[in-house]
Length: 115
Length: 111
Image (cartoon, rainbow over all chains, first blue to last red; front, side, top):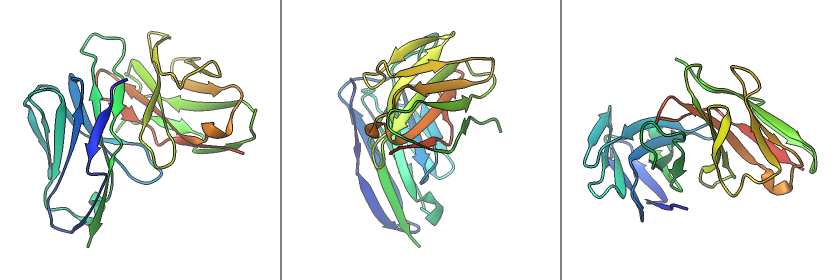
């Protein structure tokens, strides 16, 4: 099946710093999504990207859908302690009208923010 | 805000026993999914369900697994004869289209 390479595996930063993480794939996706997971909880959707080249923001978060459709990055600006968690990228192949919107997840980036 | 709810939050079962994990998807969603996350690892796809039938399943979803939508609101995952390696967090998700919303998960521990 499709594999997503997410990097870095972990990051340890100071509060106030900016953070960048990315995902690459050997095959194309139609949609990229970014999720955050807190310990013991389910993934929470942060940003969804639908078009190659698209740049989308959600507060301090900015994500881009790569032109080749094989990669995406997520930036977090001015990090705060509550940004701590695991960030997952997820790729989706199915277009609208399909019977399945299955996601393939990356392995996650563990973010630690030192106050 | 509508959310996906899962019960129980934690289930401990003996190896070989059957378990049923329950989910109530978001009410206007049409697509339903089960995912699994072994401790410290990534979230893995198990199965997707649409129009009262399985639309795709992974190789993890073998004959011991089954899904059902027994009424208009519930979506269940049954594991017929649990194995130690089935211990994991199981997440239900639903979507109207491409954006999947996940429940809080059920932590299954097989002893």
